[in-house]
Length: 157
Image (cartoon, rainbow, N blue to C red):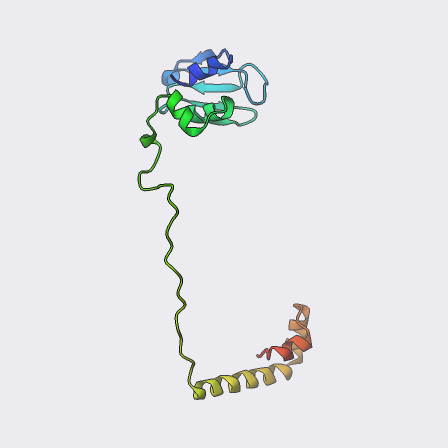
């Protein structure tokens, strides 16, 4: 069974419009229900054919056709088209949930008191320098930072 058979099954009555690449057929679109030649069917492309509506842009292969217009599941569509599932599935993927390694946070040791002192001094001098730069304070204010925020979080320059 191919896409042309499926189209006839839902009474589309496709008409042959070309012999190129095994044939092209036209019919009324089953989705937008318009026209008589906007729905293109290429029954010999791929494993189960291919379709496309030039107006509503619905498109797909035989499996998608079964899902869209016959209300079938992927597995049911494959059975109807006699397509073996292993052609369409990846054997390394399964339905089992992925096992993620348990998170264990890395234990870090506190930095030395001399490093902490140096960092505090750097923050203090940078903050002091910012507070002496009205041009930079104005720039930060225009970006939404209040003077209070700059002081509270010891912003520096």
